[in-house]
Each structure stands twice: as structure tokens, then as C-alpha cells.
Image 1 (cartoon, rainbow, N blue to C red):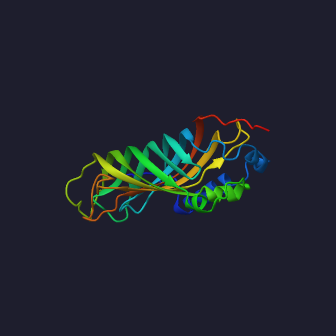
Image 2: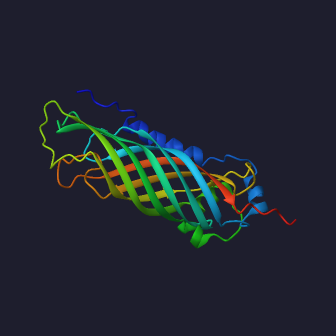
Image 3: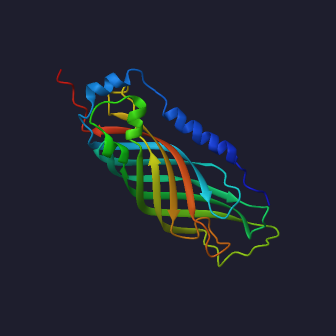
Length: 250
């Protein structure tokens, strides 16, 4: 049987993660501090919509975990610059394969859709921010958040049997289903003050680990305690449409 292609090897995956966050943390706009002084803390609350792209890896019993695309969309309400709640939808592909160990199913390709509600807190900013404008890196650090959520994921798996399986599946394959998912998030928010003014357009790099409350995320089990996780690195563009930034009085 033909093994699903490994789109990106593990070393390349870690390189992508490094470059991804290095680029997003780079100073994208000159004169950021002056822009921040002009508008700082005038509208830290508000509603934002967002959309973006991510890359997923399936973390189950498969040895090969190719990187696949996923797409994200959602909305958030910011109570402050450091605390928000939101909803997120994502859809894409999860894939795993393992020919060398001759498992009963040597590959699984999962087309999934997930919908979650999330809460995010930036503890450094919440505890230590002095309410003044800061240079780029310090502001990114203050807005470094941790998040957790809950929701559901629907999976549609395509399974490929091995030609000479050595390990039986544990129970009956369940290729399709809807399960509870708990996402854990780590990320930051990077304001782009040169686009429509401060606090309107921002970038949101994020690393996410998703726990699925089922051993059938990839459609079958090899052992009773099969892992059911998937990871995602993503970059979203966020647009704040209410309230609009207030003009300076001076």
C-alpha cells in the first residue's frame, strides 16, 4: 500500500516554528512607540473578528506525522489588553502513517471541523503593566497570553489497512464521529499601527495543543490508552470593528 506523503519532516517542522515566531516578533512598523503614545489605552476593550491559516500535526500512535494545512476564523471580546474571551472555528486535515510497525491500519487521513469557546489571559501584562506605552518587544511580552477552551470536533477519517498487519486494532474502527475537544493556547498579539491607526489591525501568532476526549481521533485504536491530541501553529489577522479608536484631544 502507498504511504501518505510526509509533507514536511520533523527538523523542517521545528525550523518553520522558529522562523514563524521570529518573523512575527520582528519590528514590522517604524515609529511604533510614537504611535503607541498617541493612542495608548484609549480603546483596549472591544470586539474583534479574525481569520488565518495554520499547520497541524496529529499526535496519536503513528510514527509519521506530516504537517497539513488548516484554516481558522472567529471573534473575540477584549475586556482589556490582557484578558479576552472568544469563539473559534477551524477546519483542515490531520494525517498519520506508520508502515514500519505493520499496524492494522497503516495510515489515517482525517478531514475535521472544530468549534470552541476560549478564554485568554496575559499574566505578565495583567500583573506588571504600568499603563504606559512600551517599545515593541516589551509590549509583545506583556501581551503574551495563556488560554484554554472547550468545544466539539467532528472527524471524518479515511483509513488504509496494512498489507501484513502485525498489531490488531483494539476494538472496532470508528472512522467518523463528534467528540469534545479542549484547546490549550500560547501566543501574543502584535499591533500594526501603520494600518488604519493603532488598535485596529493586529497579528496573532499562536501555538495550540488540542486534547480530544476520544481514542478515535484517527479512527481506530491499537491499545486501550491511545493518545488523542493534535497540535497547531497558526497566524491570524485580527480586525477591531467596535469601538473605533478615539482621536487624540491634543
